[in-house]
Picture (spheres, rainbow, N blue to C red):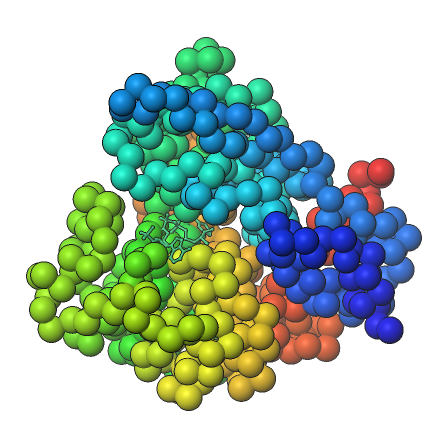
Length: 451
Ligand code: NDP
Ligand code: 2IT
């Protein structure tokens, strides 16, 4: 039995349904870091894995709020504070009906290594609620956010734990959460990132994850000797913060993006998607993508249920580079087969863990350049840390300064990941490179800090 199998056996308890995603994330990391564990016995000696797979604490609380009909609604809120060896706990909040402790453990676990890869002083955490923001009025969102913060404020602080956005949590929600924190604590401090610019947000935080994923891909393609993105057809899934800004940057550099998707269906526009319209539909009106074809009747709308089991319409469309930017496990083995058959050269994970393990294996074994989430989407949390820096020094950086620092950060992450893979005998494997490099920094800090 190899070192990875031996380690994994210790954690088999994690396979219950709620922990499936967490186990998937953990399994990938453990397999990746096997060469590191074999080369340095300190990690075993200090029980680093056993310590890393258990969060420092999981806070779970009731959120009671009044809807617009004055009916009392009850949701569950969470904050999973995973590891603070490298800095204050840091990671987003997700508001989505599928949120439970297992989902947030998977996201918090990934966040430890992602944040470590940025080279910045931030630990890993994640939080959120099973609250569904869809169809809620602005006042209902505000009342929920206030009620959520009534509990959450006890556990966070600018040097303790700094939440941000994720699925269902954007600048509007962060604004309401910040307002409530300020009211309760009488303290005006950088306790959340992704704030609107007018009260402490960083320029470019909304764009950072999507732009960063494109910067990462540019560096990876150059390092792997592949043609650049300009002039190439790209496919993107999702139509939220990450997807729309990935599309924006791809269009700015001269690529043609022909798809996007939401939880109900996919848009395929062979002449290139109309980003202004997408922003209007998804960011302003918060409606379904189906309305896109009322304006662009030549485009195709493919409802989710029309697509065969196990595959997704976006990944069946020929492309040079693919960018899954919606949610976990949205790119399956079937999708990977379709991408390969259509000549796809690179896949960049804008979302967290959007590809299944089988899809990743297949893509890599066919020579597709594969950029894993914890490296490729680290631009969001990196600019969050820039926001923390600006708040701490009461300063405001220009758009150009943040963009330049983001670009440099993504290039550095890409190079470190590629170099680490090479050093550990798995050249070209960015999944192993990211896991080893991310793990090593946090594990070394844990050893130095004692138990
Ligand atoms: P948003 O809420 O802005 O957008 C999410 C998008 O994904 C929407 O288009 C949504 O469709 C779609 N979606 C959500 N759940 C599902 C589902 N179960 N099936 C199909 N589609 C779904 O979130 P973000 O863009 O912020 O987040 C997208 C991904 O990126 C997530 O994995 C997140 O963890 C990750 N991420 C986000 C960062 C950030 O800075 N925001 C940073 C790093 C990673 P609909 O419009 O119908 O709801
Ligand atoms: O998954 C992620 O990296 C995020 N949702 C952003 C985290 C952050 O603190 O900016």
